[in-house]
Length: 162
Length: 165
Image (cartoon, rainbow over all chains, first blue to last red; front, side):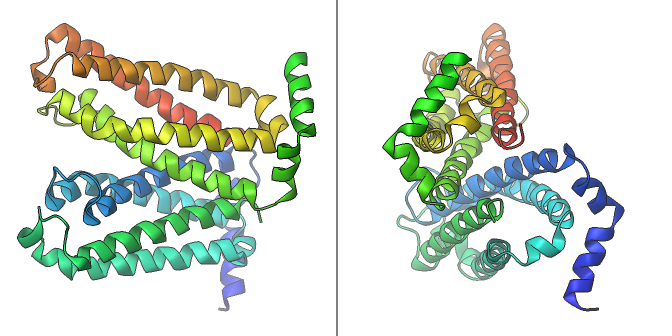
């Protein structure tokens, strides 16, 4: 099945039809999406700024990541589900927008960066947990993450203007 | 309401308002900055308020918590006010003649006072853990934190709803 057919099939689902046909559902889901995203980005930024050595210097990286992880992942799952619902309501249109494509690309890159950090510098975190400044690999991961997530927010907001 | 309509009409004639309108990228760019500042503010607010509200472990020093989180809130607020002002100047009718904008402003004014109360309460109890506060005060700050959380999410809801009302 070609991508266009998949997108059309998504739009034809009862859920997508209900969201597209209701003046109330789309904004309600969007509010939940925005509330979840600001918490995802805000808690990730906390950890990124610590990895850069700029903020929360009184806490170790391990301590801080344990504190933020629950919020980051919990809210990310909510953002993903609500995002998928919003997308379904006009899948063909969204898929063609540069801002949507950019958002997905940046999310993918942010995911790769996170994995690279997790299986790289983070494995030895106990050795540099409280070091200031943190090792270069940690600072690079933090800087990249902050940049990529800023891009995700900008692209996400731009979708509404295209 | 008539006075507000006059104000909107006047803003629309100003050079800065027409400048903002004539560049299509300004409003989405400023809205992006607005959301990023909300992210900074909300992450700190949630971390602080869920603890003060007693939803997660409260064996932490009250004053240390407010010193850790509230500076982010007080730094993000001016960014939000300035970016919000640019959005009002660019689209005065969309904001000022919208009841959800005024709900949002009312909740914002209230929650700023509540957050200051939390801060003052923390400064008044140095080196005390949240679970060691006298029962009366503990109950008071818990209630303030719960109401604050509801108001902050109410602000986000009304903010997004401005686009639909």
